[in-house]
Length: 86
Image (cartoon, one colour):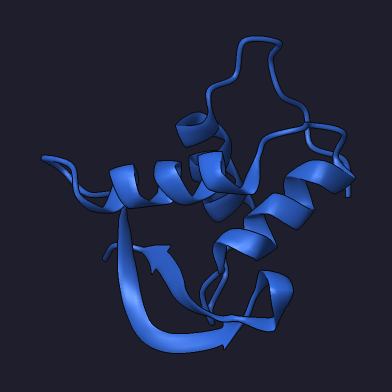
């Protein structure tokens, strides 16, 4: 699926856009977001995606919340999932 981004897109803006556009009912892992961005032609490091998701969870007005469910992520290591905070 093609996603239109501006040239100067920051990682947090990319993560926010992915969550609002795809509405993950079961949550997304950082690896899920990384895969969607890479398939759309945007090259962010997985570490940058993790950092952005963490920042959007632990800010003054959180956009994301970390769920207790885990799924297999990069390198088959279990990863927490995140969803839009209600």
